[in-house]
Length: 78
Image (cartoon, rainbow, N blue to C red; front, side, top):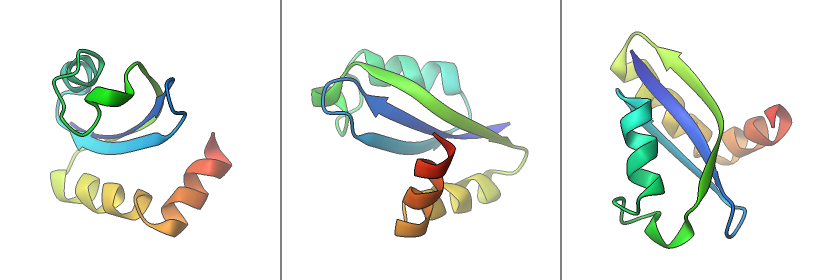
């Protein structure tokens, strides 16, 4: 499975959107500061995630969620 996830920083209250094949491992990496783009914004909460059987579909969904329409979609769902 491939996952698209939305994290919310409890430090600056901003979202981070990503995708991975191992959600537990990736979330642990974010929480421990091993991800350069998020290490200054820890701790995080997982706000939502979606599972896909196909990596390409998950990546397309991630790209959409990073767009302005995708941000509106996230705001509606959270």
